[in-house]
Image (cartoon, rainbow over all chains, first blue to last red; front, side):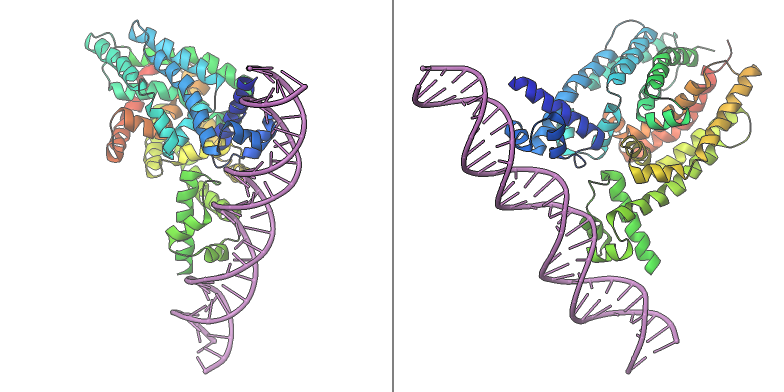
Length: 202
Length: 202
DNA sequence: AAAAAGTTTAACTTTGTGGTTAAGATGAAA
DNA sequence: TTTCATCTTAACCACAAAGTTAAACTTTTT
C-alpha cells in the first residue's frame, strides 16, 4: 500500500517532470493527477527538489544500464550493431520523450541531474568496447576504414534523433503516434542495412 | 540607442529562454544581465509572454528560412546533400542549442511557439522538393532504391543529432568547445561520403 | 480496548515572481 | 527654455506556488 502510493506519486511526477521540466511542473498538479493532496506529497518526499532527484535516480537507474548493456553484446560488429539499434529503438519507443529530456537537462547542466548521471559511468566503457570492435574489424579489413568516433555518432544519430524530432517528423510526414511507432519498427532493419552498405569495401 | 537597448534585451532574453526555457527564466535575471531594471523591461515588452514571443519570432524568422533554403538548392542529389549538410552544420554551429530548444518547445506543445512555427510552413515544401529528387534518381537508377523518408531522417539525424547530444559527446570523447566544432567541421565531409557509399548500387 | 504508528485532509504561512506605479533624472530636439 | 521620449529608482501589489501545521481518521501493535 505504502509502496504503491509512493510509486504512483513517482510515476505521476516523472510524467510531469519529463514533459514539462522542473520549473514547469506544479506540485499541486502532481497531487491532483495522483489523486492525493499536496500535504501527502511532502509527507512522502520532503520537497519538490527531493522528489525530482528521486524521479531522476529511478529513471536513469533503469534506462542507462539498458543502454549500456545494448552496447556490450558479443558477436561481429554488424551483429552488435543490429542488437544495439534494435534494443535502442525498442527501449526508447517505450519512453520516447526520454532522450530529449536527458539532453535538455544535461545541456542546462542541472546540478542534481549531472550528479545522478555520473553514478552510471558504466556507460562510457560500454561505448568504447563497441568502438574497439569497429577498429578491430577495420584493421582486419572486414569493413571500410573510417573515423570510428564519427561512425559511432552516426549510428546513435540515426537511431535516437527520430525520437527527439518526433513532433516535426509526425507533422511533416503526416503520421500519428501509431504510424510513428510503425515507422520506427521498420527503421531498425533500415539502419542496419544502411550501415552495412556504407561500410562495404570498394 | 533605443533599438540598441531593445536588441540588447532581446539578445539577453534569447540566451535565457533558449538555455533555461520559459518557466525557468526570470525577468529579473534578464534585467540584471542586460544592465537595466525590471521596469524598463516592461516598458519595452509589456510582459514576459510578449517578450518570449518576440524572441521566438526573431529567432525562428532567421533560422528556419536558412534551413529551408539549404533544402532547396539545385543540382544532383549528392550535390544537394552536400549543400544541405554543409549549410546545416555551419548554421547550427553558430547556434548549437537551437535544435534542442526547438524540439523541446515543440514536444511541450508551447502555444506561442507552435503558432510562430506555422508561420514558416515554407519549410515543408522544401523538404519534399529534396525528397522528390531522391525518388527521381532512384527511379533513374542513379542511386540504390531505399525508403526516401527513412533516408531523409537519416541525413538529418546524422547532421543535427550531434548538436543535441553535444554534452554527452564532449564528455565521452573528452572534447572541449573548440574541439567539438573541429569535429563537426570534419563531419561535413564524413556524412556526405558515408551517404554516397550507403547509396552506391551493388 | 488502548496506545502507537501511519495516513489523510483542510487551512494556513511564506516566498518568489510577474507586473505596476509614482516621482523624478537624463538627454535630445523644437 | 520647454518639451518629449527614454530611463532609473524604489516601493508596492497580486497572485501563484512551495511548504507547514494541527487535527482527525485508519491501521497495526500491545
